[in-house]
Structure formats: C-alpha cells, structure tokens
Length: 119
Image (tube, rainbow, N blue to C red; front, side, top):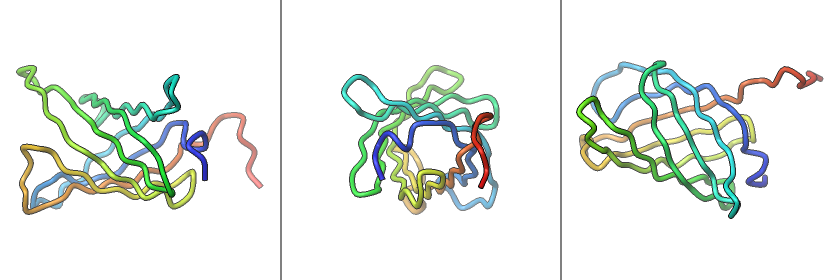
C-alpha cells in the first residue's frame, strides 16, 4: 500500500479514552502536503474539528492531532491506524489529558466516491 492510496474521506466510529461504552461518529479527511506527509481533519459528531499531521510506513499511519475546546484550550494526542486496506483503517489513540487507564478506539471506512464503479 502507498501513502497516496490513503487520500480521501472516511466515516468513523469510535470510543473515547474512558470507561464509558458511548460511541461517537464523524468523518476523517486525509490529504498530502508538499512533502508527502499526511494532513488529517476530523469532524466529530458534526461539531468538533480536530487537525493533525502524520506519516505512513509499513501500512501503519501515525498522526499527531490537536483540537480546541469551548474555552480555546488546546488538547493534543496521537492516533495510530493499522491500514487493513486503503478503505479500512483500524486505530487507537490517546490524549495527553485523557484517562491513562484507557485508549480511545476508532475504525474508519472510506466513503465511496460518486464516480467510483463497483465490481
């Protein structure tokens, strides 16, 4: 798999870094910068935006991310995705101020492009 194959938009299902079973949903947009590094943008539950930069090797995608809360406090973390296929990413993540006893979880599924033909 190549880094270029990851470019696109994914739907996400995840769980936060705590002991609740509550799931969140959203989208993840992956693109490349001029140095062929990953740029990521998440929109969680249609309200919270998160941004990150990362790198890809051996079908593993690592992204350092951040977001601002309602009081403009910046939160940072890292997410690691195992790229099962270019269309399915399986990840776990941790934030600096999250519960250290847990890891967040996230599964990403590529959104089909309008011009994509099914076999």
